[in-house]
Length: 107
Image 1 (cartoon, rainbow, N blue to C red):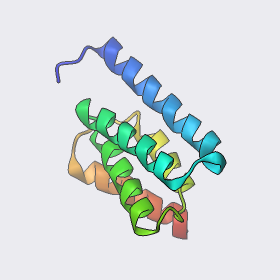
Image 2: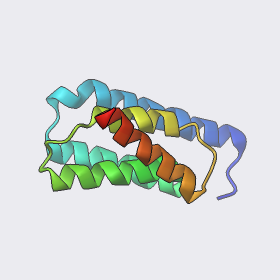
Image 3: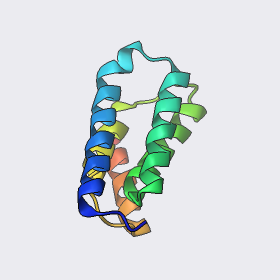
């Protein structure tokens, strides 16, 4: 997207804050408000070429919809916090972050 380094840092910091806020507010959120917040993060990440983060958010959205909201959200949010600093747009990198969620869930 031709975004300057400073602007990219601002976007990453904002996304990181939003992910942290989600983790803190999680006990008080409905499944639909969580899904809406995650979708917003996904769209922002995608629009700024933060593909691993966008793919993790998409995975969390799918998990929420498939489980009617009864999914393990924190492992996804932890991986999303890690992915927000990733510069790669390689699909294999996104896949490795998704795999890390499986490891966090199942050891």
